[in-house]
Image 1 (spheres, rainbow, N blue to C red):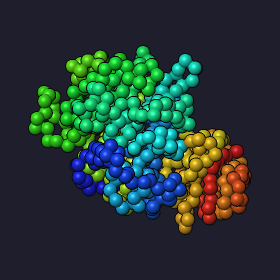
Image 2: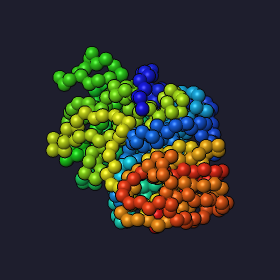
Image 3: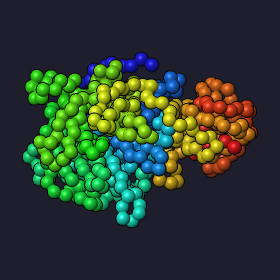
Image 4: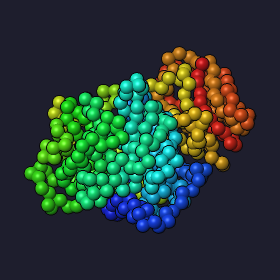
Length: 499
C-alpha cells in the first residue's frame, strides 16, 4: 500500500479549537449540539487498508482514533484514545476535524499486539455532563487499601482543563469523582502562564506517588494527592524547549521521563547546545526530582512528524510502554482517512517497537510504519473469542452488547461483512465450530483470506442471539489466519469457539 504524502496546514487546530470552545462556554454562546448515539457511520472503506496487506497499523481499521495512552492489566494491554470517529460522524465526513463534537473516549485491548478487542466508548459527557469535550487521555493504575486495582483516567476537558474518571476495571464502569476539572487555566501555577491546561500525562512512581503533567505552549508538573484526584503541593514549570502539546510521563529506572510534541518553528533560536530537533517531533526530558525545575534536562527527539515517514504531515501524540519485555511507542497518523476518501485531518492510532536503554534512560529514534509490530503469542481458537477482536475488518460496525466493554459485530446493509484474525494456532484437530449470532444469512469461516478455503459454513436464522454449532468442512492443524465472512441481512455476531 503506497503511503500518502499530502501536507496539511501546520496551524495548531487542537489548541485553536480548544480555546474557541473554552471561550464560547465562558461567554455563554450556544455550543453546537451532538447528534445522538445512534448516528450511523457516514461511510466506510470500500477496501480495508489491512485486510489484504497483512499490515498491523492502524490498530482499528473501522474507526478514527488518536492521542493514545495505555495500561497493562492481567496480561493484556489496554489502549485508550480520542474518539475522532465521533467528530467524523457528527459533521457528515465533509468538514475539517476541529474536535468540538468529541465527547467520548475509545477503549481497546490486546494480549498479542496483533488482534485488538474493541471495548467501545466511554461516554464522558454522560458520566461527567459538565465537560465540554474529551481528548487525549492518560491512564494509571494502583492497588489500593481495599485490595482492588483502581484505574485513574485523565483527559482534556477541551483546552480549559484536565478532568479525571475512575474505575476498578480497565473497561469500566467509569465514574466522575469530581464535578469539575482537576486543574484548569485558573489554577495557581497555571493561571496567567499557560494558555491551555490540557493533554495530561500521568505516572505512578516506585513509591506509589502519582504525578501529572499538563499544558499547551508550556509544560507544568504536579504531585497528585493520595486519592489521585487532588493536587498535593505547588505546580511547577518544566522548561521544555519549543513546547507545543502532547504531554506524557514515564518512570524508568528511577528517572522521571517527560515526553512532548515540539512546535512547528524553524528553531533558529534553539537554546541548547544539543542538536536541533526536526520540526514538530516528539522529544523527551529527564529528572530525578520532578518538582525542581532546573533538574529537568532535555535529551533529544525520538520520533519525527508523520510526514517524515511518508504519511500526511501533522503533529503527534505518543505513549511509551513496556509490555511483555518489549518497548512500544503508540502514536497516530492520518493514513486511514484516505480509505474513507477524506483528507480532513482524521487520525488513527498505530504502534511500533522502539528501543529504550533502561540503564541510561536513552530512547532511540523510533519509526512509523504500516506494517506495525510482530504478534507476540498465537490466538487460541479453543476458548471463546469475541467477534469484536479483529486484526482487520470490512463492511461491519460494532454496537454495545449486554455487558460493559462487550460489543457485537453487525453487518452493514448491502455489504458483505468480513472479520479477520491472525496467528490462530490449532494445536489439535477441531471437529466443530460454535458461534453466537442472530439475524438471517450465512457466516463462512475461510482460511487466510476472504476468498480462501472454506473451513465452515454456518446458517444463521434466528431473531434472538443463539449458540449455533456446525461440523467443519476441512480438517486442519497449525497456525493460520481466519476470515469470518458474514453474508446476509442484519447479522449480529457475538463470539466463536472451535471444539
